[in-house]
Image 1 (cartoon, rainbow, N blue to C red):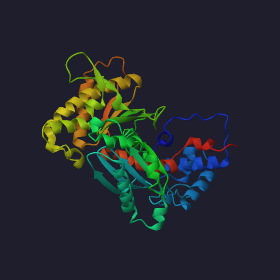
Image 2: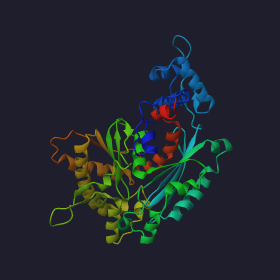
Image 3: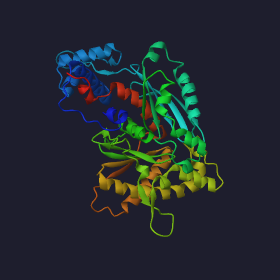
Image 4: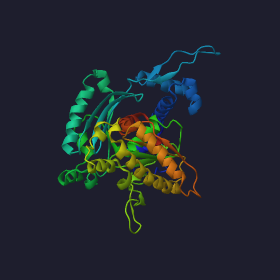
Length: 413
């Protein structure tokens, strides 16, 4: 899993004092996490391979891996024979080594998942609604956590390492777009999701923006082409995104990097003097919901049937044309600031719709004046609607087991 821990758990970047020293415990913990991260990335590695990749001595890597095995985090594989000397024994992550719970709470639906140490989803729960309320959040957490954990034995329950949350920042905003009553939207203004959930669960709680979590999931579990610098776009009720630089999630100064929906684009649907509006008001799924309402159709099909939108084909075609016209312009602006290798597009919609959105965006982008800009691939994401909740579930695993250079400087010498 890529080294995205610090970006997810501490949005504002910190400056490490270069004069600070470290101690032996910090080095040990860093090396343990480094080995776990390498094995996660490669599937399995022997002690010799770990030593070669890390620069640690074979004896040191052997001692650390033995301890990780004793802790239940690593499993021995079948020895590989046929070479000179002792057979090579590959070590892999133990799926039962740790568990995490991920919680995605959005403007139209909520999801809870139980994830094991190798990133496999053991169980998933989902609810939909017209708009979210704080009471709805708390009820779903209570009932969902009880359901997710009821079939775990005592040992598995003890190995739950945390509870990750992915939710929109400023839940009280965009009242007209979301369609929630004013008093409900205002209730979110004073509601601290992180601290309130901490009262409901017995584990450490980790929180990040939902689009950032989706980007983290693509980086950790998708990204088949191996891009190290890309802009991630996620179509949801309100469109959003994330930024990956040098193989790590980049949150920005205040955690708002990749707020793609707030980018200004030309107002293509209004006559008169030239004007601009945020991409949220041109390319979000709530726009499609409003189009369906205006035609007398029930928009709830979009979130109640996330894998089949065939019933709204005609309206959908018009929305795709409008959305991709605006997105292609926004992409041009983004790559003029950072020369991304790729633009990765995903969303809470069926795979066929994702493919159509990507293809139409490519076509419109190719017709733009791109002189002076580096070329960028426009590609499909790989996870879809589950990206946000999978990103949430990965937060506790990253916080507890991913490589973190700051561990070297957490304690004074």
